[in-house]
Length: 525
Image (cartoon, rainbow, N blue to C red; front, top):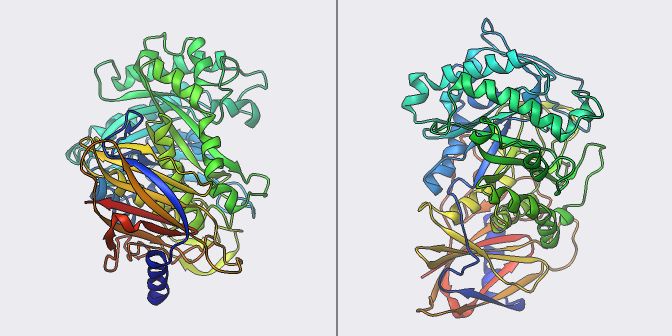
């Protein structure tokens, strides 16, 4: 395998493909966007939270996987715990171990969320097992419209975050999310078909008023509230959208003034009926941009209110992903391009949703006994491991870096398959990421294509003369393992990176070749 990847690297370095000029500003352009070091973050399905974090001791695999990001960016990813099972969670102080009731599995959804979850104090106390200084958002039950349930959950969260174990680790309760995807309540039986955004605002305000009082949330408290968390958006002042919620008075109550962030959920497609898209469609540059840019009106309206706008839950295909698409190496490139383009349109942070056994996961943190693709029984349990999209997340983190004030701009590249982004620290160009999203599949015949990038520089200042190139090596876009980043693998039993790092150095004037289904990080000197 080593010799195969070495051959690809040599091919990319020394065999020119189609020439493509890439102008790169030397100093930070006005269009560049400042990005948080924790821009890439996670959303965790709430039902099996203790399988993620650990129950009586930490899940070392998950800890390592999250800490890998901290080593690259200086901070761990932020964690939102909630989603569909958030609205099926009840509290009982006598419960020591989470009680779960699951629906029947199906080939479409082999690992369904629990429909009945009962938790006690230990459930929230498990937050202590996250990496130090992690910022957390917890979801509370609005769907069942039981204020007592939400109140008891909130008091248990306060108790957990007041404990010495959590305080001494610097773990922060960033926010509370009240309800998950209320726009779907009228479809899932939680509310009548006539349920509308005005009713949502009234319900949310009632719950938020009581919850904020119970938790001590105020204008000066570090903990704030998230608003909306809708599954979709009308992008207008009718229907469910941030604009419509604002118009209905979401921000006008005292509790509404404690909202710091509007959360939106978004998936690029759906697998709920058992039919998914093609991998090339997911990876395609224009699809990613069209998919995300539809939220521009919502982002503008939210920013006008002085609030952050996050994708509090997102991934490739809803209903846990599409087999042969969401769990593949091509999804790693999609993840990378999706994250970096989201920065460009003003999204503050993006939380990729994860659940035990979900096909689109970056991380499988627990042993699995059934196939994630169709639910069939495995011959032996599958231990915790990362999936290909994790590599896209790691590359994004490494490109963003540690200084906390990196600015990112999309580069102008006249090619429907090649994307590029420039990264600036202290006003100067330091790195660039290039992605070739042309899907080279295991069924592809003929020679693997390559694109040659001629790097040129615009603006004043001394242009760099040397480059260091780090590559994401992928055999095929539909592979589900065997990726390496700079010669190293994260597909280890510990979740820590393994192997010797491999990069190439050269002259800027020689340019860079990038083969189909590849990403490169170029550092300038």
